[in-house]
Image 1 (cartoon, rainbow, N blue to C red):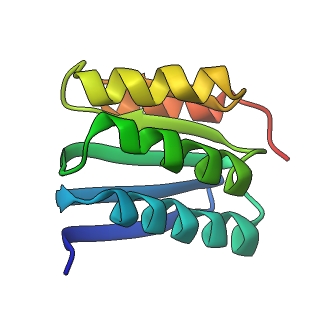
Image 2: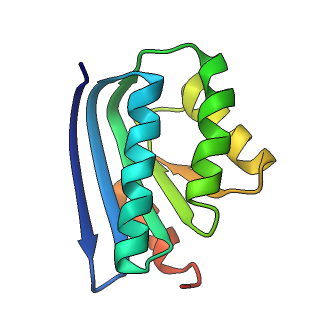
Length: 125
């Protein structure tokens, strides 16, 4: 059973899909969250996703990112992903490194405003 609180919204004024995750997540939880994000991308036709994981703890080994990232990149290939992280931790750095290696357009930020500003300045679909 998942121990994560999830909130996902769409802001029509900026064309941003915003997802906030809190709690402790397994690798499967993370895959589920990004699959839900992909559904919002489809519904709203947005290519800008802000994911706030600043209050999320990963409960899986770093090696699981090797499974997660190819799936996420397939679902969100056309998206710009801004991740708000609480600190520059190993898992956040590894996520970003893997994203860049498979040509995902992703960045980590330390606050929501910086993440939003970056996304707003990215080209729309």
